[in-house]
Length: 304
Image (cartoon, rainbow, N blue to C red; front, side):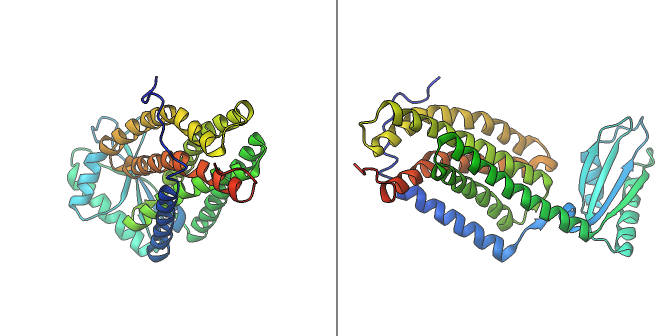
């Protein structure tokens, strides 16, 4: 299936427009992260986790619990848990026991009033200390760094050129920083689910980049006489339909989750929607042009 019949877009000739736009995205994202920081979830900062369950015969949905708590002025993350009884986990920032006890009392009182015929039960109350949250945040940063480093090694080995690996990771950095900056600017919560989204975005992005690089490598072997500019432009144009079809399949699901997935998946879906757009953009208009710039400036390749 092809969306385009032999496109002939001059990606290399126009390369400074997307590269310049990427520099702006990175700069604005770093500025947002520096100025506002992240709204970390309790996994990273420490907080309280409360599990509440209802009788098995009760028909209680997570939306009902959320509306009940909001009506009483209780703001909390709410997650449903699969099991024989309707069970829900409430997450609240803060580890001070007086504040925790007040939160639990207010939440339980609101639920008892809203579900008079189905008495809620407090199953457990756990406090996650800030030391645990700090350690988890450190491990998360290292997980992302090591993932990117592994991608550099893989791409460099596969294409026998570390420059190609660095170009791919610069494109990944652009995608991950762009989504992170958006979350910092909007004040959206950064939790483990969003970290999963960032790593997923990196995977899709490098996959698209490798498809373009594979075509470039193939042409380097079979079309030795053509100029580097034409070789890269042809490679991007020939894989353009595949790249767009791939991202559309992911985007359709992400958009559906964004609008209909509920509050728990809303931020995850937003990260996927924005990250996929940035990843496709960087795979097409950033990674390969960076290889071209390096090769023509330092690698001895012809510009024509």
